[in-house]
Amino acid sequence: MTIHEASERYTIPMEVLRAYESWGLCGTVKSAMGAWQYDGTDLERLSLIMTLHAVGFENPEIEAYMKLLLEQEGTEAQRLRMPDRKRGRTRDEIHFRERLDYLRYHIRKQQEAKRG
Image (cartoon, rainbow, N blue to C red; front, side, top):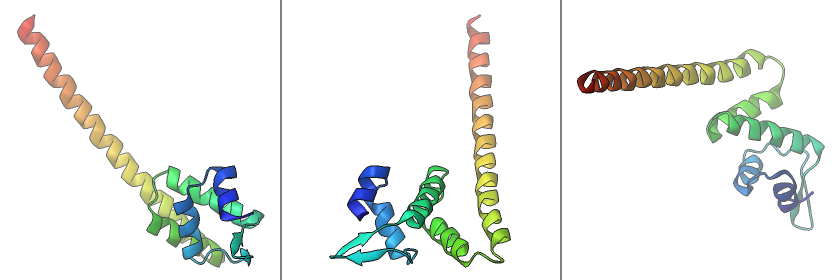
């Protein structure tokens, strides 16, 4: 499957596919008549990359994760720390937003008390 076919069939943005190729993760991708050919393994990896993008990983984080994944042995703890850190930052962001919501609630209550 060519890069354009993979992009269209699986709705993967071309920039993601180009990043995937530039990271050197396409070990099984072959060039045929000037066009990259993706196989099932590549599509599985691309699915994981899309998941990582969807949960907020940036390209450098994804590249690092995928390179660790390719090393396989002994990288599980490192790979697990990456989503753990992302989860921690997300929890912090949620907590921050909850505090903002509380502040807004408090201000509205004060406005209501002045009116009523």
